[in-house]
Length: 130
Image 1: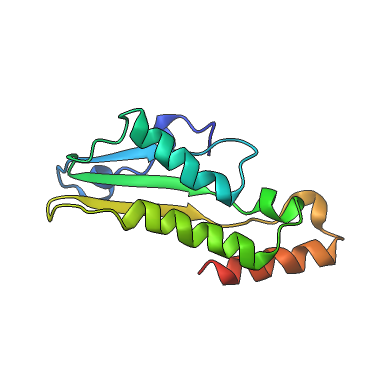
Image 2: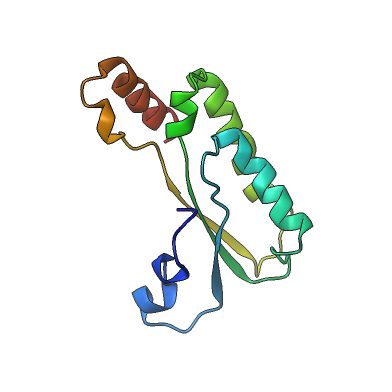
């Protein structure tokens, strides 16, 4: 996702046919783990890229593969994800502001077809993040 061109971002206007003020923010970084996402969001806010006054924002993120390959415990990954969600949605916001998250959880890496232990971890993490 970190390399996606903006044309790949979700278009609410295109999907609904309605003119609306929604922007999409890609906070993905290659090689990141879920615990990095909270820092990336804070950096976005500190840079002024996320205006608190903006009406609607859609965040797009993908994570999980690097967490599993770095052998992080599922419960620690889950806690990091909960902290990220609190950082994203837990802040004060006006009734006019709306935040949405499109989150792509862990996907099986093609080279893991015979690595059943890793595949089991992917499944466990995917279930834990739901």
